[in-house]
Length: 208
Image 1 (cartoon, rainbow, N blue to C red):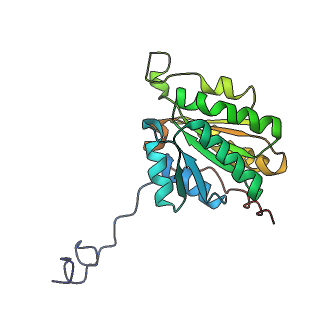
Image 2: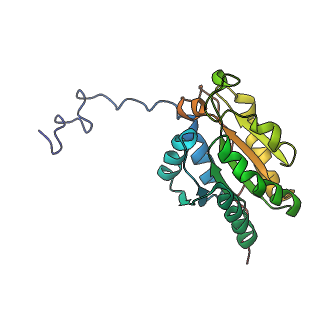
């Protein structure tokens, strides 16, 4: 027996001469977290909530630092401060319903100040909307009144996923807030084969 209990000649302990089973497609949370990291996101200001836990775990696994706050408004304001200090998009992550509305003031501030704020908020599953689900609210309708771009990632929303690179690029070229809405079923489910957000834009240069 080899160290670790695998069979001789099989690093993973499988039958001799067989390759490891190929990894399945990434979940929406994993794909989004890695895309954000590749777009240059190093820090996310967050107040945890059930709708966004899969994304929080995926961000941690991707090496993105999570900075916890005690109020969603603080997450949005701190993300604005990051944008002002670095010249890079500042990212806040909040949960659905009241978590989103608490951060909405920061979205308005970023719009009036033309700051590259990215507000990511959870949302109830599409199958539960309009059926008194926990914290169910048409958040995108509110965000569209002030956000430069709104992208809603629901289960099966390949068209919206494809919009992400162009929407994100605008945070640097035409400053203003981006609202990114993520549903738990999108975050937990494997992405369909061939569906990806596309390559992110080059990370913005940090301010001198």
